[in-house]
Length: 198
Image 1 (cartoon, rainbow, N blue to C red):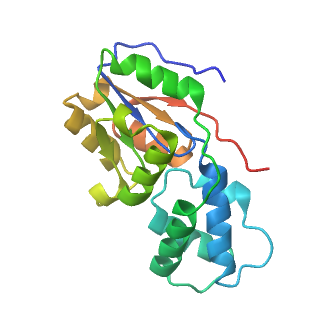
Image 2 (image 1 turned 90 degrees about the vertical axis):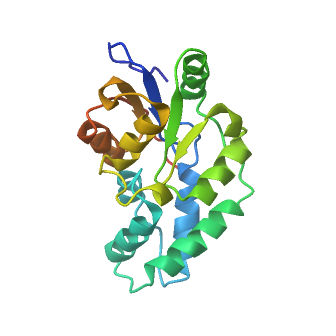
């Protein structure tokens, strides 16, 4: 994977987590599919649509996936079940090496942060499983803002906590909602392609 880093004198770096730093998206997909099957989902969860939602806060994903598949469900209940399935998964999480290597190099000279659409407990679980908790001193989650991606709130809060002007931040993202959020925050971005579960 070749990262296309835009030209610029960046003062801080912000990373999405799922699908950007750690290849968690296939594990999240399977957890959503299992949770929705409990609600009457027949067949496979729409995988293309799932990947289009990369970066959207998990509670909203529950509503959107339920609507997509014509399921009448309690989004809060399904979201909670999905999070427990994900945290309980024994699937080994694979780091996305080029992005993590960039983050390690950047941390030597610049502030870095995570801005994830996941809840704080799920983000913490992922960071622990991937051995990345100590790498990121600033972690912003869906629990910290009123509006998740594609709103700019997460990235603006991460910039504030790093003490860096938003226009001086570079964002690493794998999802369209996250890229739109970065642009809304006035930040340049690097696209990290997500991998399908196959």
